[in-house]
Amino acid sequence: MGNTGLPSKDCHTCRRRRVKCDLGRPGCLRCEKIGQDCPGYRDLGRVGSSFRIVTPESYPHRKRQNSRRRLKQNREQEARYLCQFVGARQPSLPYALTEQWEAHVKPLVISQFTIVTSQGARVYGSVDFLPQLLEHADTKSTLYTACSAIASAYFTNRARSDSIGFGHRKLYGKVLRSLSNDVANVEMQKQDSTLATMWLLCLYELIAGTPAQESKLEPQGWEVHSKAMIGLLRLRGQNQFQTSTGRLLFQLAYQSIQIQAMQTGRRPPPEAIAWLHSMQTSPTAKEMMFLPAFLYSDLASRIYSTIRDLIDQGSHEKMLLGVNDIVMACKNLESSISAVITQDLASQSQPGPSDDLTTGKSAKWLMNKHAAKYLDACLFKVHQGILDLLSETLKANPTPKEHDELLCLRESSIKRLQDIADHILVSLPQLMPAKAASADKQGQNIPTWGHALKLLWPLRLISSSAVVYEEQRAAADLGLLRMGHEAGIMQALGA
Image (cartoon, rainbow, N blue to C red):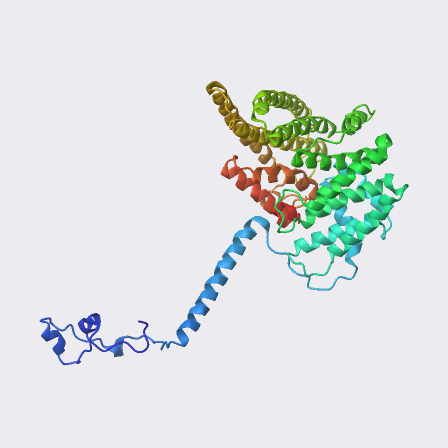
């Protein structure tokens, strides 16, 4: 029972036996009756302690206080652990802003695709057209409102709160209504700003993240906007490849379309071959560093769709007949990709004043690295499909020799998935340097969308794979954690 008063005056033997002591001197009678020497009594005047009287009413209250204190200590410890990776929460401003936050929308979006060099800041990659397009956009235009929705969602994510009142969901709804009118307009259908807005809505979906009830790698809204971009590319026709902005916009849009095709197991649009041929035969084809990646990823997408078709048909006999051809096609594709990647890496420019201060790499190196990681992700998806196909084929009735060959191919696919995961993860410190590693540099200390978006799909593939090593999955999860908490891309956290 709990202590409800001062210490007992009874001798040690009586207290241990839980009997009433007669406090006799020099020893108690109870000890004499059992044939033991009485050990004597405590001198309570020399205890030197203060005693708390605990009653049945006060004991639960104090227990609740201790529980709350321990819970608070645990939360503080978890917060310190999280801050070690994703940085502390942003402090609130000690004074009110003197201008509207909307004035910072355009600089924010552009800065997320900018590298800082010793010669100044510059936009790189497929969004090189964005500053000029926004410069001519009215603040009430659909394009500018889409940027406002993205910036608002980003501010909400960085503040870790939905109550700061930017209302990015209302802005998103406004963009959808306005874009619907633009798409219905024959002249606006083919405008660069319309396709750019559709791509920005895809970006918004990744920034805002997937609702908790959804568990897919990509949000549903992202899939809808990607499908809509296919229709816009068809309407724009071959003329879209005549301008630099048109080619860059195609590059942005088609990458989302390809990822969607790989995720769903469907073939690319029928017009894809003609689109890629137009880019390949363009006088500026050599300037399109992402073009080889599109050509090979298109082949990867077609191989993966064939795999899904075989699995969906459910015929184990067809699987057994076609699995070797698919494995051989994948090997040939990997050999071609490896030759191109090796050639690109060998032709890298020497360090110079135009290098990104954060990563220490040139814009050309960054673009080639992004293309390489994109192809790695496509191959990862194909090998996942092959692994699924082999698992289904083993359910057939193969001969003992065929069974052993299938098991060997399965082990080879698992090993290849683990190797590709390593190829992807080794780029994390290069494209997303940790804060401690970049603190002495003049570049930015947090990941930008330009780098994070290129790694989002590859890292999510690794994170969701059941056959990669545990440390590989943990490294991918940590990279996604940084994307979510530092770059504000909530889709990286799956929420």
